[in-house]
Length: 88
Image (cartoon, one colour):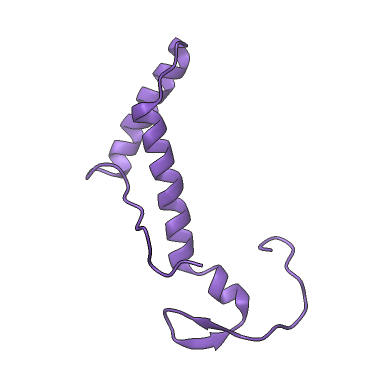
């Protein structure tokens, strides 16, 4: 839907942060949803970098480098993804 959305006009949806009806694209593709997607992906990478076990030395080396970089980006530790928050 983000790449090839329909051109059809639809009923407005309530934007949960602005409390106003607007086109669905502004509700679906808002900053909070993007933040949740990025945090979710980063949390998965953190988990794979810390808990993944491989017999391949190159994969283990990659995991260590990935974790070092993630620690630079998230100095407080693993990214926390809220369990709720009105994300659509």
